[in-house]
Length: 297
Image 1 (tube, one colour):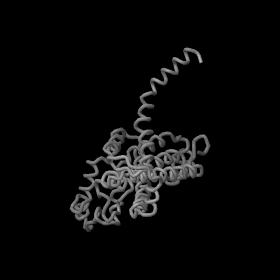
Image 2: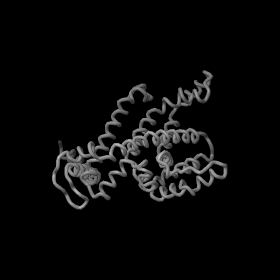
Image 3: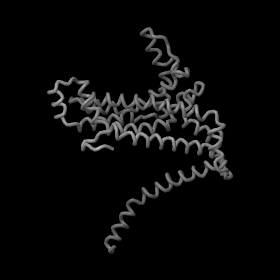
Image 4: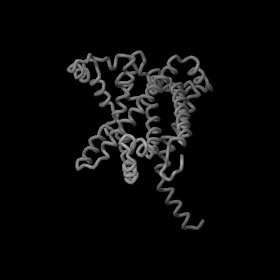
């Protein structure tokens, strides 16, 4: 390697060094440290002794909250992610029309994602769906009896799932970009064949959007399995732990029970679960994700 190439390599390393330093300090080091903690009996303020796999054994054999919490988290994911993707796709299809006001509409529809599931929005959600909240007041005006949105174990999980659907903007933008890339000739051909709107959507739009659906599905699934804010602010895991998501359990173990080692073990089990689910979706994608070049993932 000549002096010029060495100089270019050094400049390249210099430019990427902020990212490398950030990755080593704020991602790789905490990741390795949490793995070590999961093998110890560390508390929040003191590094404990090495105890091997005891935390994991206890998690799977003695912890009465772990499996119910995982079941609630999986159910929450199965409800929230498809609902969010379906709503985002619906709005994207609507916004794909030509109109002078369309840029304003797109900005307005994206605003909820900027606000996200912040503490303020979560408090607003709690206010809207409490027994004397706005939603029950509106239902009362049309003769529908009040629903215990946050106090019923059968309803509370679905109520906080709506908070995730609220953040549909990012998925919607990606769907919109995918819709813009579908050639108009395909729609013309479908029209010549006499296809209606629903059949055209099912035979043309949906298959060509599968790469976007696949990407959105992976990203939203990972986010939903780690959800914390909605369950913590809106319901605090209740009622009767019906919304006790695994993210909330990790928080309780680490900061309420002061068992950082045990919380790290729960975190690693969650990480491995997300990894397995993601790999399974990647494996199945070859059967339902279609790319423009005719290849399959």
